[in-house]
Amino acid sequence: MSQLQKLPIGIQTFADIRGDNYLYVDKTAQIFDLVDNGRYYFLSRPRRFGKSLLVSTMQALFEGRRELFDGLAIYNQWDWDITYPVIKLSFAGVGRNREEMLQDVRNILDENQERLGIVCPRSLARTVALPSAPEKPGRKW
Image (cartoon, rainbow, N blue to C red; front, side):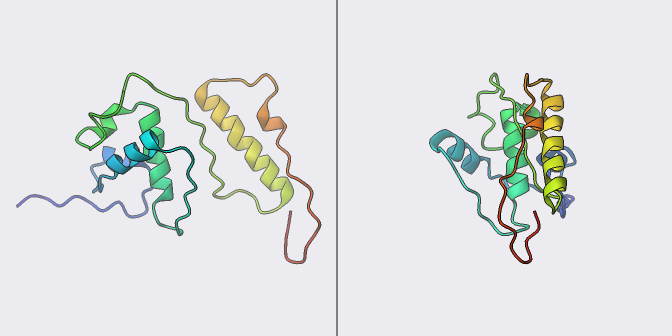
C-alpha cells in the first residue's frame, strides 16, 4: 500500500506544496488557458478559496521555475526559455489607517524592486499617494 500525500492545509505557496510533496490538484491546464486566451481577469472568489495559491502558481510559472511543474499538464505546453519579472502586490496585513497603508505600500514596492534587482529612477515607492476622501463615520483613512 502506498503512502498518501499530505494535505497542504494552510499552505498557500506553490513552491512549498510541490517541493514538500503535498497533494496538489493540477489546475495548470486551466491556468494555461487563462494565460493563452485571456486578457484581463478579476478574481472574485471568497476568502480561503485558493486565490493566493493561484497567484503563487502563476508567479512560479512566469519566473520559469520549470522543476515545480514536472508531471503537470502545463509542463510540455509552456515555453520555459522565456521568463518574466513578476511584481507581487499583496495587501494582506496592510495597515488600516492612511499613514500605515502608505508606508506598507511603499515597503511592498521597495521589496519588489530589491527582489527583481531594479532601481526606479524616481522610485515609485516614494510617490504612492492615496486620494483624500471625506471623513465618514466608521471609516478610517
